[in-house]
Image 1 (cartoon, one colour):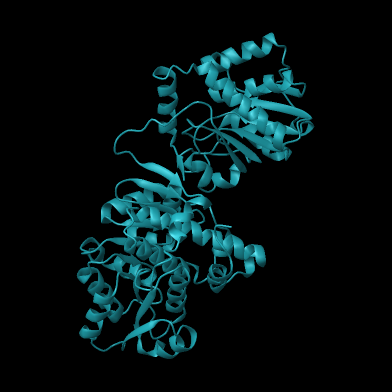
Image 2 (cartoon, rainbow, N blue to C red):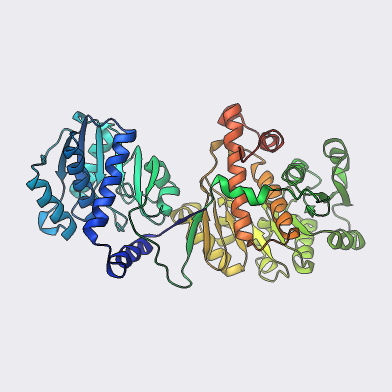
Length: 501
């Protein structure tokens, strides 16, 4: 599991290393420059190199990298951009050193003449739109189609949100220092960053009590969630109540129920409309059924028995938004003491009546996509996309729930301020029913951890489920194509592949 830092956390960590750990700023800059030079020599064509440098310390890193490469025998030049009177101390020092070593400086380069460009215009501190000469240079770099290695973060990308601030460099690779940053994972920053290399330069994290902390899962982190107790039984691995499906829709209920089984749950009981009896008997006979008739009073004894039997519940896939569905959501959230995963139509009902969630008697995890989140919050999808972590965190705090905000880069947030940004997956997941599969996987991992007595918080389990779901999409796309993957193929990946392989 990797920790990420915001721009402010990185600034504070740098300052702590310099002021309290007595790691001199020039040493940090030299180590950063060495990391950039090494990446270029390992992964790029270093025949002719241009370091395009801004006036701050990011520019100093780039100038130092050009000097290191030149002294190693490579054709490297520096293109400074901006007013020299505004140079930071680090940039001023590096330009003096470059002059002493007679490193060539060019002011009007023809970018297409180079085989690799070092982007060292702006670092993690950028917070306003790029304009003027800087915007012109960025556009020229992009138009050259020469591979770019960005220093710390592509110039023009917001460190915390991934937003493009006016214009941004499209890098082939980014060498980021000490920690990865949220903007390298969140779109469109993730698209501009290329391959990200994290370089250790001697800076450790410096965090304030209570501030948000960012993480991302790695494949190796799935191991604790997928290990099986060799002495376990079906009760050991958990009993899930799936409140899903309606008279018109059965597929969503089938997908989430089968996914829960395939992800390791011991038993699944489906509370669903009477019309879904035959499809379940034919497609998923392993599931137990508790039935009701839409439009008729809910069978109280059946509902109570199903809830008492369960270790965890999920509600929403294919449920519909009619009166019966509303009564089911109200019944479950007001009467349950076990954790509940809330998805799809259940979220649309909560959007109409937020008190259903605010007054919930049980721990909850919500899994909205952006359309559902827009209905839940009253915000537009473009507004939500401007800062996905903030949107997820605000909702988690307001409703005291774990929020899994689904997008190309899904964000998981807890009320306490823990955030996970997912890095797995591809466009194969953009298919009907994919979210239902995630809901089943999430419920399955949660109930198994609960029954195993795990101390892992729900947001950590949710992040693992999201990462696994994305990994299944990648594996399915590897066997067919991203465009042809169906939700059921994700479940088959659980059947036939080892996610830890």
